[in-house]
Length: 268
Image (cartoon, rainbow, N blue to C red; front, side, top):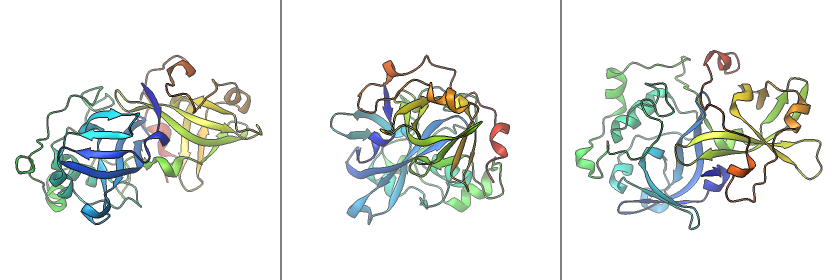
């Protein structure tokens, strides 16, 4: 089923032995267009620390109740590598994170999740923290090669909240702003970005497939598409009020087939 990224914000995360906190943001991969992590504000039990939770940990979602059930324990989350959610997530931190939980590396393969297409079922991490001992960040740095495009270690992960609101630039000028993202909860792939058309008084929104996106300028807060404004405005209309989004969409395209060189020029 398809859902909007915004609909995840405020969901309660439940570990195997208690609540973790609420989802406040997501990080998505702008090469394969897949949600990689949810940012969870833990509240009092972890002194307000924000942690990353991978969809690989999700065992079930109740969309009506706003609850996401996880296959990991509070102790595993407590011992997970720290992360500064105000900065882009580096591959170094991802390696430490995946080592801690025993997850496969999604960047080591051609499918949305590396060697696989879907996230469930995943049994690589034990709910017993003692059976899944964490490694320090320094240990991972010494042992693993960092396969990143930039010296800073920025590996194409960006905040959904940050990109929502970016200007959408067609080939012949600005056409609107990013209003949301639509993802498939079977494999957490982003199927469309919703674009709020600028010239429509009542904020008409359309569904833009990621395959039409030519690049993103993070400093300028702009998303560039390979379509003229008239073509963007003619895309299928998006109604965020509908609970199921499949009937609103154009036919599926092959997902995540973008080549990295299309992005490199805009990521400085």
